[in-house]
Length: 425
Image: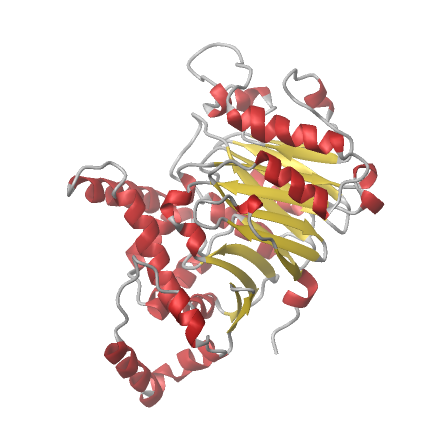
């Protein structure tokens, strides 16, 4: 294991972090070394490592689900504790009602998690158990954190290739827009994961979180999503962040990836952008709990929708659905499922995120590359933009919000995905 230097340790201490318990930590270390039954846990932690890329943690994990979680919790113990405390603390204060607000938020998240639990992959539950034991964070608190993404937010994403890009190379951009007030942007991590018996992948995420919102696997398949608020939801399904992780762990191409989403037991409205760098092709999958529709580039079904902007060799979305049956269930972009007929989209999610992407893609058509992709990301990024990622296999650019500064307007960190995914020694 590569231990962080003192300067990095100091930078990890946020105002909401618990005070370090040096005596307890020392005692725990001694117990682990002296008691034989814990030798396997020590070996598991030693199999992982952490590096810092201009201050951004890159964590390499490998092994069984429990080992992945335990390594994560051990390497990032302080960060995991602080991230969980900050994010859940933000939600618990949201109602501004002393004593009552924390109880209501806990009940809300606990109820959601309980409903979803029968549909969550057993490996994910085991990994969360390992994360809890490695970090010292209560398992129920981790459950609550992982119940949040199925609740709310919006984003933007596009993929372009062929005639649209320089040299025909596939470019995939995604902006994740949520809330800088929750503080999750203070705990970014790039995870490089080699799960036993599954495909290796890169998860661009945060300390304490094992689900996927942005990722790339060893088959050159990348995925991003856009929350699309809809009437057609259910808590009884597989949370979106685990469905996306399943895509990375199992799918080797667009057809398989799309099938996982279409055939999955979905919970909420989401527009997915799936890109295959090998095939130089991408698709959009629009979904609600019960409906799903796959869109190709310049899809004929888009050309007959007056508010859509289809393009050759490009797919892109904000939260507005193009499929009529899905749009008819949407609250997103000014939709109203209680009224007959389809509403034209309104608001910044459509006017800035969707039309802004359309304008940028059209302006750079034929010359799209990683640089112009970042320019488009910056142009459509709202104040709530907490993460911005550009993939041009084998290269990856990752930006995270800096305080209240949107991610797309902050520093992008550059990585070589093939080098990251090299088999662990």
